[in-house]
View (cartoon, rainbow, N blue to C red):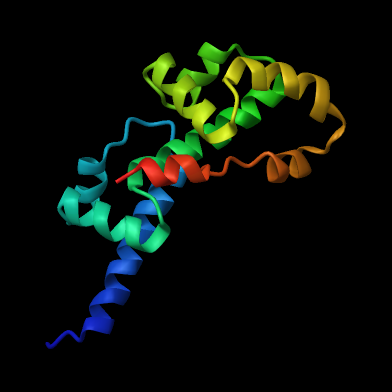
Length: 145
C-alpha cells in the first residue's frame, strides 16, 4: 500500500484532531506531551511540530489556553477562590497558573475575578464567554521559539 504525501497529511491531521479533542475533554487531567503523543503513536517531538504547524501553538500552549478559558468561566461565577479554580482546571502550581493567566488575559486571576464581578454580571453567560475568550497576545507569540 503506497501512501502519497497528501494521504499521509490527512492521516496526521486526523490524529492531531484526536489530540486536540482529548485536550478539550480532559483539560483538567494531568496531561503532558509524551502521554498525548503515545495516545496517537507519535513521538513527542513529532507531535509538537505537527500540532504547532496545524494549530499555531504547541500542544502544551493549547492545553493551557483551554485551562485558562475554563478558569475565566469559573472566576466569573464568583463562588470559588483563585486557588480552588487553579486546581479545578488541572494546574498543579498556583504560580504557573497565575503567570499564564496574566499572559493570556492581561491581568492576574484575582484582578479578573474582581473585575468580572463588577463588570460582566449583566452579560449572559454565552456572550461573556465569547467576549472574554483568552487570546494569545502578540508579544508572547514573538518570544516563543
